[in-house]
Image (cartoon, rainbow, N blue to C red; front, side):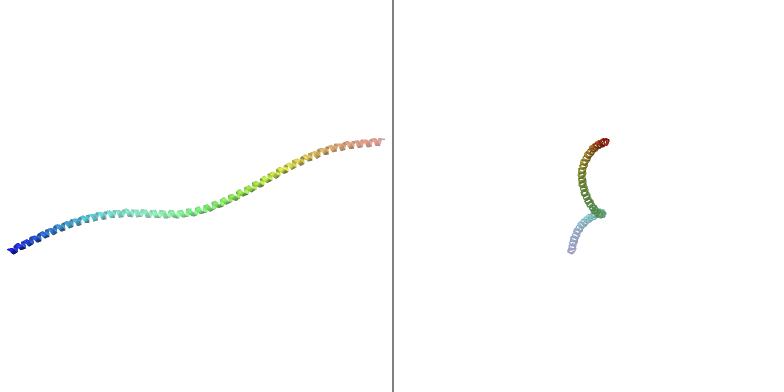
Length: 161
């Protein structure tokens, strides 16, 4: 009997140990289930983040394409800007040359106006001198006519004598 009691005690101990192990394992199972649930939630969260990140990646890829096309357009605009800048410089140089030519032409015109004024004064002086000579000529022509008439009269008187 002692043996049975010992066996019983031993079985009870084993049963208690087994119950303790069951409880321990149940606690571990619950902990693992809880951990599993957390992992599943984490997986769901990460899956959601992943899909959000994928949409953002697509958005960024679209932006990269747009920026690349904008950069190529910018390069084209830069080339056009350089061309227009060169044209502007050429036009400015032409404008400066035209302005210089205009100033030279204005100076020559001013000099020509001064010379024309000088020649007009000379012409007026010569016209006055001509008018004086014409009036002297007319006086001399009258005197000549008078002297001629006196000479004719004198010849007639001498011819009558």
